[in-house]
Image (tube, rainbow, N blue to C red; front, side):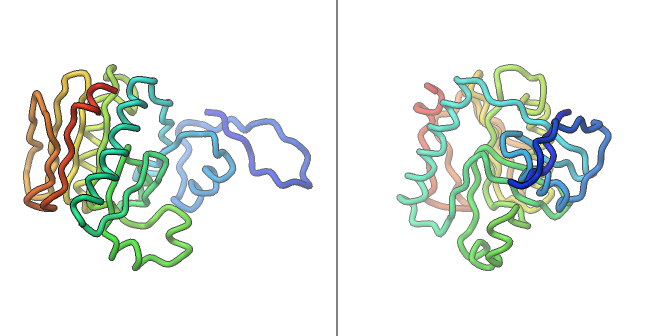
Amino acid sequence: MTLAPPHSPSAPTLEPLALPWDLRLSPEQFEQVCQANPEAVLELAADGRLIAMTPTGSETGACNAALNGLLALAVRSSGLPFKLFDSSTGFRLPDGSVLSPDASLLHLERWTALTAEQRRGFAPLCPDVVVELASPSDEGPRGLTALRQKMERYRANGAQLGWLLIPEEQAVEIWSAEAAAPQRIAPAQRLDAAPLFPGLQIELAEVWAG
Protein backbone atom coordinates (compact mmCIF):
# COMPACT_ATOMS: atom_id res chain seq x y z
CA MET A 1 0.00 0.00 0.00
CA THR A 2 1.33 3.43 -0.91
CA LEU A 3 0.49 6.57 1.04
CA ALA A 4 1.92 10.04 1.00
CA PRO A 5 3.89 11.23 4.06
CA PRO A 6 2.68 14.28 6.02
CA HIS A 7 3.59 17.48 4.20
CA SER A 8 3.98 21.07 5.32
CA PRO A 9 4.27 24.07 2.96
CA SER A 10 7.92 24.65 4.00
CA ALA A 11 8.96 21.02 3.60
CA PRO A 12 10.37 19.58 0.38
CA THR A 13 8.15 17.34 -1.71
CA LEU A 14 8.63 13.70 -0.66
CA GLU A 15 7.94 10.48 -2.48
CA PRO A 16 4.94 8.42 -1.28
CA LEU A 17 5.61 5.91 1.46
CA ALA A 18 5.00 2.21 0.88
CA LEU A 19 3.37 0.78 3.98
CA PRO A 20 3.31 -2.96 4.75
CA TRP A 21 -0.14 -4.54 4.86
CA ASP A 22 0.58 -6.07 8.27
CA LEU A 23 1.08 -2.60 9.78
CA ARG A 24 -1.02 -1.96 12.91
CA LEU A 25 -2.21 1.55 13.73
CA SER A 26 -4.00 3.11 16.68
CA PRO A 27 -7.15 5.14 15.88
CA GLU A 28 -5.12 8.33 16.53
CA GLN A 29 -2.40 7.24 14.10
CA PHE A 30 -5.05 6.25 11.56
CA GLU A 31 -6.59 9.72 11.74
CA GLN A 32 -3.17 11.25 11.03
CA VAL A 33 -2.72 8.92 8.03
CA CYS A 34 -6.13 9.97 6.67
CA GLN A 35 -5.31 13.66 7.12
CA ALA A 36 -2.03 13.17 5.23
CA ASN A 37 -3.78 11.20 2.46
CA PRO A 38 -7.14 12.90 1.79
CA GLU A 39 -7.51 11.09 -1.54
CA ALA A 40 -7.22 7.63 0.01
CA VAL A 41 -10.39 5.72 0.91
CA LEU A 42 -9.48 3.87 4.08
CA GLU A 43 -11.01 2.16 7.10
CA LEU A 44 -9.40 0.73 10.23
CA ALA A 45 -10.10 -2.75 11.56
CA ALA A 46 -10.42 -3.33 15.31
CA ASP A 47 -6.97 -4.97 15.34
CA GLY A 48 -5.35 -1.89 13.75
CA ARG A 49 -5.13 -3.19 10.19
CA LEU A 50 -5.70 -0.73 7.35
CA ILE A 51 -8.59 -1.57 5.03
CA ALA A 52 -8.29 -0.02 1.57
CA MET A 53 -11.75 0.68 0.16
CA THR A 54 -11.78 0.75 -3.63
CA PRO A 55 -13.91 3.48 -5.24
CA THR A 56 -17.45 2.41 -6.08
CA GLY A 57 -18.50 1.71 -9.63
CA SER A 58 -20.67 4.33 -11.31
CA GLU A 59 -23.87 2.32 -10.92
CA THR A 60 -23.30 1.76 -7.18
CA GLY A 61 -22.38 5.43 -6.78
CA ALA A 62 -25.66 6.47 -8.39
CA CYS A 63 -27.57 4.15 -6.04
CA ASN A 64 -25.74 5.67 -3.09
CA ALA A 65 -26.53 9.23 -4.19
CA ALA A 66 -30.21 8.35 -4.55
CA LEU A 67 -30.20 6.66 -1.15
CA ASN A 68 -28.73 9.68 0.65
CA GLY A 69 -31.20 12.04 -0.99
CA LEU A 70 -34.15 9.86 -0.03
CA LEU A 71 -32.85 9.45 3.51
CA ALA A 72 -32.63 13.22 3.91
CA LEU A 73 -36.25 13.59 2.78
CA ALA A 74 -37.36 10.70 5.01
CA VAL A 75 -35.75 12.18 8.11
CA ARG A 76 -37.35 15.55 7.42
CA SER A 77 -40.78 13.99 6.83
CA SER A 78 -40.62 11.78 9.90
CA GLY A 79 -39.71 14.60 12.27
CA LEU A 80 -37.26 12.29 14.02
CA PRO A 81 -34.26 14.04 15.64
CA PHE A 82 -31.62 12.44 13.43
CA LYS A 83 -28.49 13.79 11.80
CA LEU A 84 -27.59 12.23 8.44
CA PHE A 85 -24.02 11.39 7.39
CA ASP A 86 -22.74 10.33 3.97
CA SER A 87 -20.25 7.67 2.93
CA SER A 88 -17.17 9.83 3.52
CA THR A 89 -17.83 9.98 7.28
CA GLY A 90 -15.75 7.79 9.56
CA PHE A 91 -16.87 6.72 13.05
CA ARG A 92 -14.55 5.41 15.75
CA LEU A 93 -16.43 2.45 17.18
CA PRO A 94 -16.06 1.21 20.77
CA ASP A 95 -13.92 -1.75 19.58
CA GLY A 96 -11.31 0.67 18.18
CA SER A 97 -12.19 0.23 14.51
CA VAL A 98 -12.92 3.24 12.28
CA LEU A 99 -15.64 2.47 9.72
CA SER A 100 -17.54 4.53 7.15
CA PRO A 101 -21.10 3.38 6.35
CA ASP A 102 -22.52 4.31 2.96
CA ALA A 103 -25.13 6.27 4.93
CA SER A 104 -25.84 6.62 8.63
CA LEU A 105 -28.16 8.32 11.09
CA LEU A 106 -27.27 9.54 14.56
CA HIS A 107 -29.66 10.83 17.19
CA LEU A 108 -29.14 14.57 17.63
CA GLU A 109 -28.85 14.19 21.40
CA ARG A 110 -25.84 11.92 20.97
CA TRP A 111 -24.30 14.28 18.40
CA THR A 112 -24.67 17.40 20.53
CA ALA A 113 -23.18 15.54 23.53
CA LEU A 114 -19.85 15.30 21.67
CA THR A 115 -17.21 17.97 22.09
CA ALA A 116 -16.30 20.23 19.18
CA GLU A 117 -13.02 18.35 18.80
CA GLN A 118 -14.81 14.99 18.69
CA ARG A 119 -17.20 16.25 16.01
CA ARG A 120 -14.29 17.47 13.86
CA GLY A 121 -12.57 14.07 13.92
CA PHE A 122 -13.95 10.55 13.80
CA ALA A 123 -16.89 10.72 16.19
CA PRO A 124 -16.23 8.16 18.98
CA LEU A 125 -19.48 6.23 18.75
CA CYS A 126 -21.51 3.96 16.51
CA PRO A 127 -24.44 5.49 14.59
CA ASP A 128 -27.97 4.46 15.50
CA VAL A 129 -28.83 3.47 11.91
CA VAL A 130 -26.29 2.27 9.34
CA VAL A 131 -26.79 1.53 5.64
CA GLU A 132 -24.45 -0.30 3.27
CA LEU A 133 -24.80 -1.02 -0.46
CA ALA A 134 -23.23 -4.17 -1.84
CA SER A 135 -21.34 -4.04 -5.12
CA PRO A 136 -22.29 -6.45 -7.96
CA SER A 137 -19.14 -8.48 -7.28
CA ASP A 138 -18.61 -10.29 -3.98
CA GLU A 139 -14.89 -9.54 -4.13
CA GLY A 140 -13.14 -7.01 -1.89
CA PRO A 141 -14.37 -4.85 1.01
CA ARG A 142 -17.53 -3.77 -0.82
CA GLY A 143 -18.62 -7.33 -1.60
CA LEU A 144 -21.55 -8.96 0.15
CA THR A 145 -19.45 -11.26 2.35
CA ALA A 146 -17.28 -8.42 3.67
CA LEU A 147 -20.29 -6.15 4.20
CA ARG A 148 -22.12 -8.81 6.22
CA GLN A 149 -19.11 -8.98 8.52
CA LYS A 150 -19.17 -5.19 8.70
CA MET A 151 -22.87 -5.15 9.59
CA GLU A 152 -22.16 -7.60 12.41
CA ARG A 153 -19.49 -5.22 13.73
CA TYR A 154 -21.92 -2.32 13.65
CA ARG A 155 -24.46 -4.35 15.62
CA ALA A 156 -21.86 -5.52 18.13
CA ASN A 157 -20.79 -1.91 18.66
CA GLY A 158 -24.25 -0.54 19.37
CA ALA A 159 -26.10 0.12 16.10
CA GLN A 160 -29.83 -0.23 16.65
CA LEU A 161 -30.71 -0.88 13.02
CA GLY A 162 -28.76 -1.81 9.89
CA TRP A 163 -29.89 -2.03 6.28
CA LEU A 164 -27.73 -3.96 3.83
CA LEU A 165 -28.95 -3.21 0.32
CA ILE A 166 -28.20 -5.62 -2.53
CA PRO A 167 -29.14 -3.73 -5.73
CA GLU A 168 -28.23 -6.66 -8.00
CA GLU A 169 -31.04 -8.68 -6.37
CA GLN A 170 -33.26 -5.75 -5.29
CA ALA A 171 -33.01 -7.27 -1.83
CA VAL A 172 -32.47 -5.90 1.67
CA GLU A 173 -31.09 -7.55 4.78
CA ILE A 174 -32.37 -5.99 8.00
CA TRP A 175 -29.89 -6.19 10.88
CA SER A 176 -31.59 -5.38 14.16
CA ALA A 177 -29.97 -5.14 17.57
CA GLU A 178 -32.83 -7.27 18.92
CA ALA A 179 -32.62 -10.10 16.34
CA ALA A 180 -30.13 -12.93 16.39
CA ALA A 181 -29.98 -13.12 12.58
CA PRO A 182 -30.71 -10.66 9.78
CA GLN A 183 -34.07 -10.70 8.04
CA ARG A 184 -33.97 -10.83 4.24
CA ILE A 185 -36.63 -9.20 2.08
CA ALA A 186 -36.63 -9.85 -1.67
CA PRO A 187 -37.83 -8.22 -3.74
CA ALA A 188 -37.80 -5.20 -1.43
CA GLN A 189 -39.90 -2.17 -2.29
CA ARG A 190 -39.53 -0.13 0.88
CA LEU A 191 -37.29 0.48 3.88
CA ASP A 192 -39.26 0.97 7.09
CA ALA A 193 -37.50 1.64 10.40
CA ALA A 194 -40.59 0.88 12.52
CA PRO A 195 -41.01 -0.11 15.30
CA LEU A 196 -37.62 1.27 16.38
CA PHE A 197 -38.01 4.57 14.55
CA PRO A 198 -41.64 4.99 13.44
CA GLY A 199 -42.23 7.21 10.42
CA LEU A 200 -38.83 6.68 8.82
CA GLN A 201 -39.64 5.13 5.45
CA ILE A 202 -37.98 5.05 2.01
CA GLU A 203 -39.34 3.80 -1.29
CA LEU A 204 -36.56 1.89 -3.01
CA ALA A 205 -37.53 2.19 -6.69
CA GLU A 206 -35.25 5.19 -7.20
CA VAL A 207 -32.34 3.45 -5.46
CA TRP A 208 -32.74 0.29 -7.55
CA ALA A 209 -32.91 2.39 -10.72
CA GLY A 210 -29.49 3.88 -9.88
